[in-house]
Image (cartoon, rainbow, N blue to C red; front, side):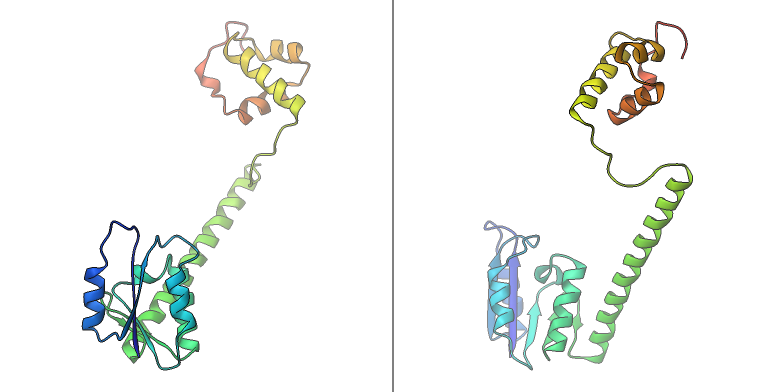
Length: 200
C-alpha cells in the first residue's frame, strides 16, 4: 500500500501541492500535519508509523517534510527498512524499493557519518590546541556571592575610577591574578581605558 505523509509548518500554509503530488504518485491514504518539523511530537506521523505493515511504502513530497534533521531521517528510514517498508521522496527522487534508490540513501548515511567524524576531529583538535595554550574547555566556573561582590567592585574601580591594578588589589584585598581573573570573567576589555595612575 502506498501511504503519503504531507506536512507544512504553520496553519497558514497550504497542503494542496503536496497532496496532489502524493495522489498522483498513487497514495491510497495520506496523513496530513500542520506542525513545525522541530517539534518532537507529531501525532499524525506517529499514527502513520504505528499503522504501517510490511510491504507498505511511505511517500513524501520532499525529504524535509518527513524529518526534522538528517539524523532523524536516517533513523526513520532505517526503521522502515528493518520493518520491510519502502520509502519514496518524489522531489528528491529517492526510492528505497529500488537498488539505485538504496544506493543514494546509503550515500546520505555515509555523508552523515563523515560529517560527524569531521566535527568530532575538529573539536578534539581545538581542545588540544587550547590545552597547549593553558586553556581548559568547558563553561566558566561560577563565582560565589562574595566573589561576585568583589568582581563588581573590581570592575567599578577599573573602569569608572580608573584605579591601577595595585590600587585595586589594596582596596579589595585580593591578588593581581584575581583582579585579572575577575576582569576576564566579566568580559571587561582592558583596552577601553587608560589608567590615570601609574603604568601597570
